[in-house]
Length: 230
Image 1 (cartoon, rainbow, N blue to C red):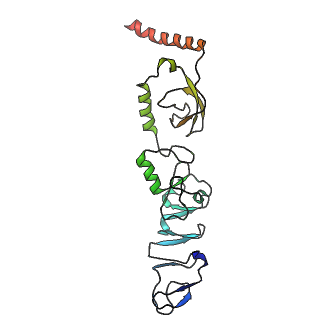
Image 2: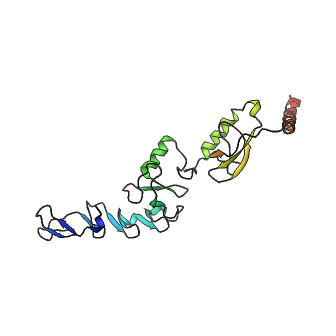
Image 3: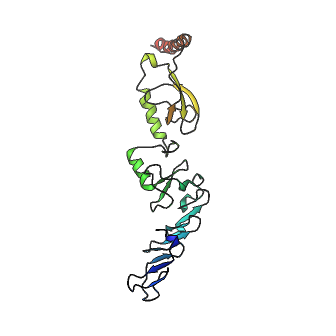
């Protein structure tokens, strides 16, 4: 039923048909603690308010929310001036559950990239260890500690000799940089921002014989001072 088209209501107590309103004109019973004469919404008191730009009623209280004109959505007041706007972002479905965000009673969570998820979907992502936006693949929170741990794991896990000088082109999902980096099965680190949130952008690139000789000479030079001190 389209509530916006409702013109008349029938009282369940006295069976009187009348214009849509909060209180029955015949017996005085209140149809709902909250009534919106635009949405024709009857409900219990949840400190609702009607947001004209959104076009629907929101669960309040009103003073704890503001309407972002670019995002076209009511957001928590503590996000005002502190979130990345994406035009009409609320008109898309949640990329996790594929349910509507704009009219949902579940609060919206704004990711660092500006995309929206239901708060409950974001909490599920956090519990399962997913750290990337399902839409743009950017990291959704600070991953510095995780990347430091990855550095240690890679340092303790050298590649086999035939892959030690292999390189690969990558694309960083966090800073969008294209880099040429050393290949490692545990991850390829972006040389621009230090993120491991990267994807391989080419096949493996093996060094030429001349490059291999130069690399071996460099390794020998690095090892020689150690042997001299011994």
